[in-house]
Image 1 (cartoon, rainbow, N blue to C red):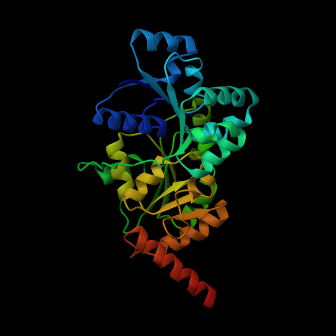
Image 2 (tube, rainbow, N blue to C red):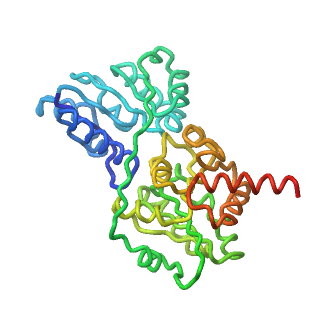
Image 3 (cartoon, rainbow, N blue to C red):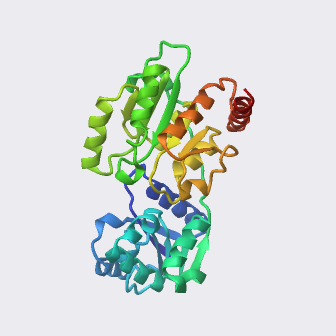
Length: 328
């Protein structure tokens, strides 16, 4: 089959990574899959002309609104893969909710990464429940063997002349739904008390106005570092060397950064939202926090476990410390 895959393809974003993985698997299965950036098109007519001219047999779209709206009235069968912000955020907008309902009604099938996401969609559009399938994401990490961790630290203005460093990485596109400023104050306060603690925010400037807001905030926050986006292999290598990966998103479909950190056996500290709680069992496969203050207690556990070399070790140490706290 010759398939069209519509997604928001900005480099180093979750949707782009997901789209590339889907394309790779479809190619391996013997199909032709052509990626197109949904942001380059404005109307279903443009996509209809494209599918006709390039003789596509079927189409897929990631994100029920951003990609799906372009397939309304499609001349070829199509399926939808929920992106996360479509079901968690865009559904709150009456106009977008109406469009998404129409798209889902026309789609042959839809894929949700979590059961929670399926239930949210099915609650809004009950007639579509039977066409929504739950399929969790696969993940593959490829850390670079030539990545220079010390040069990375120097470029981030993180001192390397110290015996201990606790570098936390927040990997996300700079946009409000990822809420990268949520933890800046509490991490900066922690850095003032313990200069070994640093938070690196790393990812593309998806929202230019919000990116400027982040830059201004970070300038006034000791211990916080805004880092340039980097190739995925280098990013995976940086994650592998960091102390823990942090997620502070307001909403998530299924965070690729969290899955990648787990695959690299790096501790994950994530905001307790449905998309994160669907893949993290608290104090088993990661640590969940409800607010910055509760995060600090988890961080103290992390930094009091210098011998914890794997996520399993860390969780065991955290539980032991919690029990000691109860009995002391």
